[in-house]
Image (cartoon, rainbow, N blue to C red):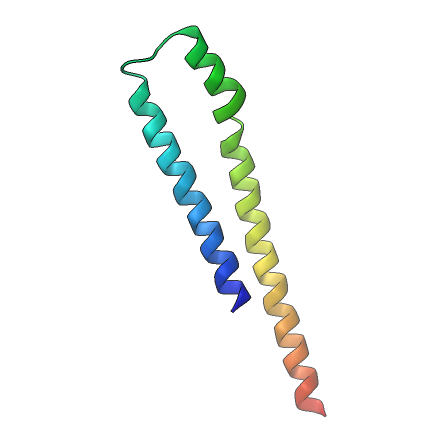
Length: 79
């Protein structure tokens, strides 16, 4: 069930970045200076594409592991 763990991790990562963005937006009402914008540009904005790439990579990894399991089970049936 490694695949389930990989996909669960992927889902958790997506949920976490969504929650982070929601909470970050709440700070806008009380913190709107240049430091906030710089922090967002330097640290938060790069997270979204990085998380998207990680999720895609995890999904591909899960697909590869599925294929490996199928290939290995097919071979064990031949013996």
